Amino acid sequence: MDGGVRRILGTVWFVLGTVAMVLVMVGVLFLIDRFYTGGNAELIDWQPTRSPEVEARNEIDDVQQMLEAQNEMRRRRGAPERSERELRAEVEAEELEKLRRRRSGAT
Image (cartoon, rainbow, N blue to C red; front, side, top):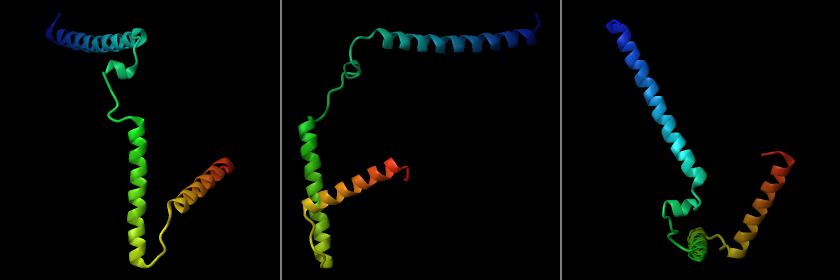
């Protein structure tokens, strides 16, 4: 064989070897996924940083802080303050309107 054919064969073997290695890696990952009996969180040793109760409390605190900040701005403008009940009613009305629009097919 001459040099040109050897170079082409070398390139072909390199490409085939690279593709084969990728396929082997995908196959190994597939087998691990198929036969691993633990959960995903266990696989990466993941633990939640906060409990769901703490997350819920943080959400409630965030809403209260935002409502207080909004009411401070409203006081400066001379507008009446909003209560959490009013805010919840407004959010509920908006969510119901979204559902109605979604059901009717309009966005």
